[in-house]
Image 1 (cartoon, helix red, strand yellow):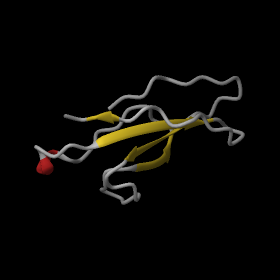
Image 2 (image 1 turned 60 degrees about the horizontal axis):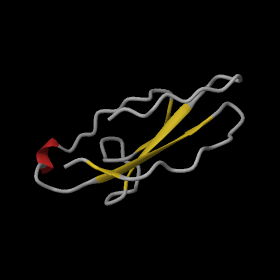
Image 3 (image 1 turned 120 degrees about the vertical axis):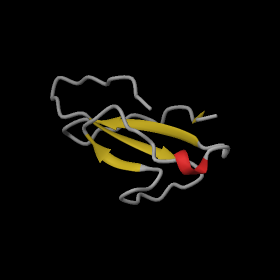
Length: 75
């Protein structure tokens, strides 16, 4: 999935992706904690047929965060 690119004069934008069905952040899980990339490949192929909903938010170098995006289904 790819988030709309956020911009800020301070730079240093990071993104957090969250799966609403599995919100915990695991190394190979469905949610991703703060990282600089606006794109993320979700490792759910072995669970095809399931309905997973994801949302994303961004923050700047100073820790200012956006609201969560609307949740979108992967199916």
